[in-house]
Length: 207
Image 1: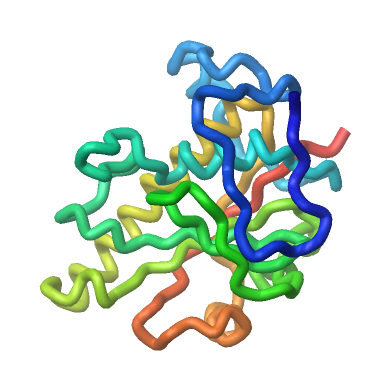
Image 2: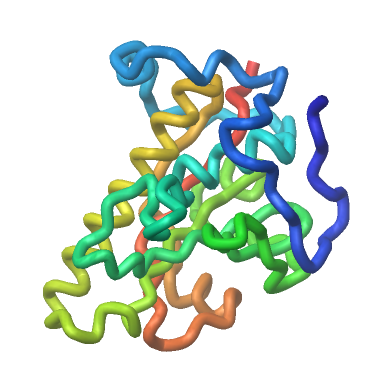
């Protein structure tokens, strides 16, 4: 049975256990990797159809969820295992922070910040906008150029995981670098040592 996301903001959204509950609206997630790569593409035309709780859960687990619980290692590689990239989720209900360890979304603001995550016309209307933020405090042992390089590299791993999930699940997605980072960081109340890398829109393609 497909579960819907809360219509209004709630403090904590408990996500569904990855790979144990499959959304009936999602295509076969066991498609061979080569077929998924063949389907992988950028789509900028979105419908206003919302993602179900199950779909969002699988999306976030694919992005950077924990796949080896005994070591708390994730689906994405991470330089020096810094795990410095935080994934924020901007939806109509508000701004949430994804916690891979508890597999929950924590409400940070009961505001719709989607319009601030990019400059393209479609951005405010996409159901889910992911914001990739590097926590530089976790990278203190690295030089500044190392921090910038690895934060970008690790974000690339996560965003590609999202692309592959979207290709398998029949979703549309696009990574976006056109945004006002200082304005978005201010709206998100980010600390100075948290740096926005890029954003990524996810939803269903327009008909």
